[in-house]
Length: 340
Image (cartoon, rainbow, N blue to C red; front, side, top):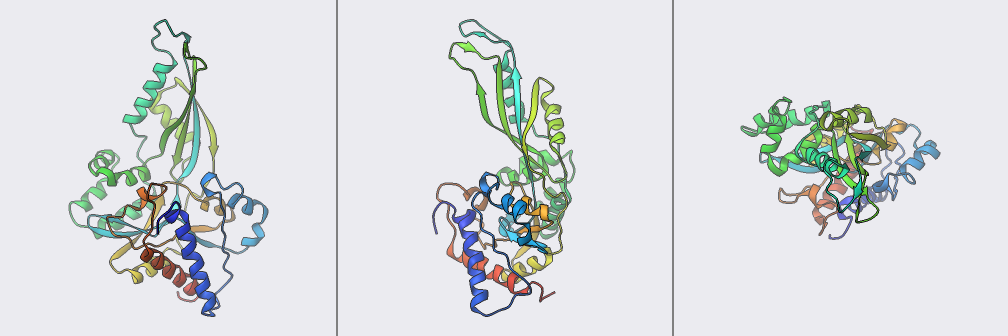
């Protein structure tokens, strides 16, 4: 099935709705209430969807402890082994604005060391450097599980990621596959918007740059600013535009239950916990002490790049993957509270 949103998130909605309708058609009484929540603005912050529900209709989620949603359940192929990544945590949004100042003037006169030059140095530094390495507990669990299931040299490379002195070198050697691990092991920052100048013949004396920053669990905006200043010094003024808190420690109480369903559905795959490098509406529901698991299982072959296909040209999902996910979610709804 082809089209924008086939993977994110129409395919997931189809899986969930199909599982619910099947449960109803079979006349199966679940162990408790099932709350099916569909919102439309997760991509732009969730203010009118999940955030609104949490702040104005928390009673609808009374006694809810666990939820399933995007994004996990997709396979990752590492060292010719197949792993199903179940999302249990996610990075936190932290948008920053940097202000750069320098001498301005008329565009006809040479000017060196001004705000434009400082901007160039800033962007060059960020393009060629990483922020410090951090190994969080969930990422350690994932890497340990992968290392145990793979042979040399893959297992050695994965365990070398634990050593901050070797992490970045090993990531560089992994090529494109290292990008996902890279974001799991660092707070990250990308320049996305630059604002400056008002006339082509006037050298600007002030430039602002907006950054999309993403924080690992347990880190704060203050930590990110300190790490950034460690790279670029104090020439740049930094302020937080937006930062949405999230839980620092996931509740793993439902992980084995979901992992067992995936092992049954596909014995060739090994379930592992995933730290999502983006963010979802799970951060809003965590304010009600609800642990969300990314669980939209898809049995995809190793040539289907799930991460790079989302929001991209020719976004698509195999029909068999939809059926696989709908069946796995149906089993989770049917067994939860019944099978221990």
